[in-house]
Length: 467
Image (tube, rainbow, N blue to C red; front, side, top):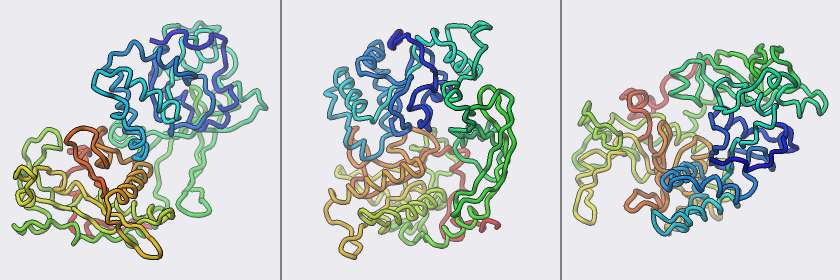
């Protein structure tokens, strides 16, 4: 798609001044993501921190050339993949509707891409076609078998020579392991919860070695970072394989982590009386488990009244309480809840402007609406105007996104979801002056079973973790 968009004068991978301080390594994203030469991806800039990169587009003219052959639908899909990665504040500042007049407004979409690229919200990454002129890059791309589809097959002489990261090795034979990552060795766990490891899970620790030959021995130190100073949990032996330093580890439950989780449950209480359903039919506060077992397809259409509020949802609220304690400008805290559980009778009692009952089932155990208050002149207050509360709630939505990857709207599975503060799609649900948090996108078979819902504090807490 984007051939000869960079100079063919070869440059070494990891050889730029910015590479030494680039902890995120966008080139790894390309390598492991299976992006073909000449193709590209659009990535939220906050994932990376670098000033100059062989794989980053250097001018918007280059980006225009890469985008020009896309179908309009594909361009919209690429932009749509970026917006959920933005913070709530960014989504407000860079509102796509301010640039696009109608669905077919190609110029408007391009103006939007240019704006977020120039403001360093977006970065465009690609493997240039000129890789064929640089043996070091070719060896690097081939180091992960099957990771990248290449049109140029390496010859034996091209596979020999210095290590891929020789730009850093030559600078003083520094020996180091950088950019540590991990992944589940169990295929099912890697698929279902790729970013969560629990005690007993076997994982592969991996890092980028500098100054260590293929097959060389390395050591990984695992630390418990919940305590200060950090405490080493275990040391592992590994070796360099296919350009990566690897070691296997069975996850242990650090004592400090167990103690911190136990303290979290006792320090940050959940008032279940505020979460109970307020229907006049007296459902008991958490529905009557009507419509259980009915085939629903997408969870949005599930009419089942779950037996309580999802435990993960309420633990996320506890986590939010913890993180809000560090907010000082202004000081923020959870005032309470404007909505918790709402059964079918509750829906029937609430009519819209067309005299039709509410039909949403999100609050049948899968959602809470959180009210935020701030401190002013020594007193905790909730503003009377929507605009002031919206600013505070957008800040809290940003915290939810940064700390536990909650998304605006419902694009990705197995993520917490939040309603936006303003309407982009006509008729969509919004939460201007409260924070709506839900688990609607959790996998139904794995994470929306009855056992994950609770009606009281003892069930929410479960058994204390063993110390």
